Image (tube, rainbow, N blue to C red; front, side):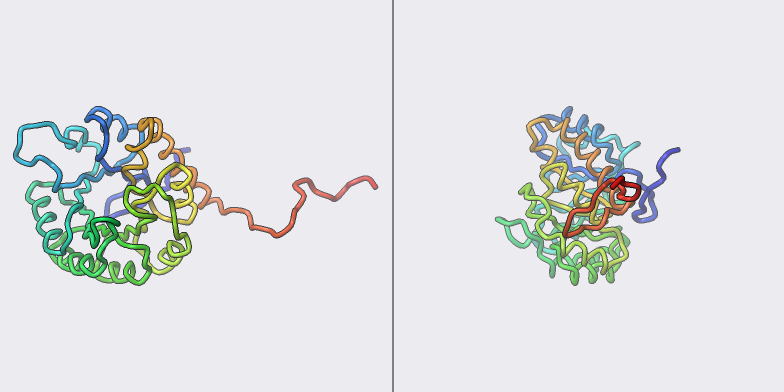
Length: 258
């Protein structure tokens, strides 16, 4: 019997809980194959880094838009106005069913500017965009983004591209308790166990790029991430055993011969 554990975003249903990026691969062919092996149904692309209007290959050539939902993002934007203009461009290009909102506050850490993100989110929602904001792991900001109409919140696990894994699971738990929209962990996942932990916490999905593209074997890592997200989700649904301070024998003690 097939597993019907789907999730909904902006009225669209998804089976895969892994969203992947398209940067840092060694070739378009590798990008295409990594996406396929990941099982992702949604892929994100940095609109400001595409060679728009130029007759040359780009990551768009790796994306089969008959099978994959495109998530254009505003990577490289440092103000709300820049992000809004980028989203409007995505809409003009016919690729803005969903937009990943990134407003960066610091070029070294790539931490989000939460204040500018809120400003941009409020305006984009008012213009009819389905907004998925990249944000710090701050429960208050996540709730405010939900209040302005964002379709999901995307708190970081660790700095973008760091591979440090989930630095503050406690905050993620509070965010999960604070909002009703999907919670998608974005940034910092470095290996399969990081993805599994995010899902075991109860997060809706995980978005990653460098964790796959930066691996020694990106194609094998794409498969590992797919399996880790699936396993972590199943573990969350199953409910882990309680932790105990002392040992508890696995075999029953009743019926033992004295």
